[in-house]
Image 1 (cartoon, one colour):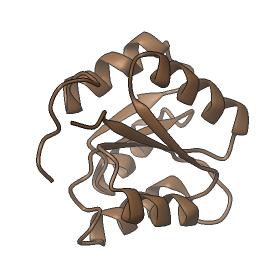
Image 2 (spheres, helix red, strand yellow):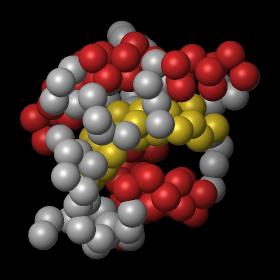
Image 3 (cartoon, one colour):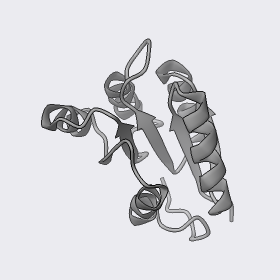
Image 4 (tube, one colour):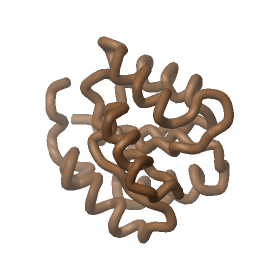
Length: 131
């Protein structure tokens, strides 16, 4: 029974590192990508249990990345939480319309994010749900 994995797609290296470190301390396996294209590749290859996705990134942004993940047979059922500084209602709606399961506005407390993750995929040591 493998531990649950979370893919973090964010162009800010420090944030990827901190989130990854904090999630590993809680028992999750983490994967990281610095842009949408790489994130889509990793998601298709590794099939993580969840994706944390930044909205504002160079190249294809998080909304487009989310749409592409949802159109792909291999990745369409992976829950995606958009994590972004864009907090306007239209941004939240765009995130949800592009296929995100949930939306967290930066800055956020790690505990809030962790609770959201557990709410969606369960604790790190709980049995994986079939995808």
